Image (cartoon, rainbow, N blue to C red; front, side):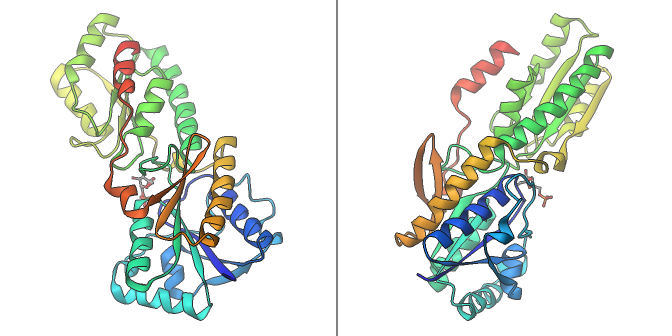
Length: 319
Ligand code: F6P
């Protein structure tokens, strides 16, 4: 193996730059040339390849976003699109690829392996923490801390007015962000896509605390009954109360990566280069506590990563 390439794809996540930096530096240390593909799979289709080195990865370890940019490519979903991408990998004589992203990215990587025999390993880069096979994904720790900071601010004003607030956090179809920040911010109610909603609990809590008490409800996007606005509307209709909403949205994806994310991203960067050199392919390189894990790409999205059971009991008891 002489040349490898790295790219980021899907939603950006804080720590992706630390990851790119680590891949480049480890690759060079192991005697490889490391190319960056700009713009995810779309960039692969359009031949946006450039040789990276230490200088090009200076001063990025603390930067959010991704210097390699990212995309959600419709063209790559077609066989013709993937063929164009592979033609470019062959033109640049790339022997192995590191794909940093979430389940969509891994679907694409799995197809490159199955259809064209491309040697490819995935690394978990998503704020959602929804990939089976790794305890945390790159970006998750930063995102939950960013969300918690925003929620703490809202709690101040909610507390002063004695208001009910419904706050929506990201996570696609997984409630990891909602559950973690809900517990961390002392929410009175946490709604995650993985569990049935029981709005009576909210009303009971309001009666218990007094009708003008501050109530914080955290809801993960992607639930069956919609997000913060839909939940607020239902509460208004059911109980005739005043409810404010906040959708945190993309604020959760930006900003300086936390120390944990920088270290995880760097560790997985080194591990991904070594995995390619060891002949591994079609796997995600992840980490369970301090141990590296190698999970077939298909398992990462087919096996659902559960929210640990104790969380539901904990949330019920302490909220
Ligand atoms: O997967 C990361 C994520 O931020 C999800 O939490 C969210 O549902 C989605 O991406 C939003 O994607 P986009 O930025 O393309 O709207």
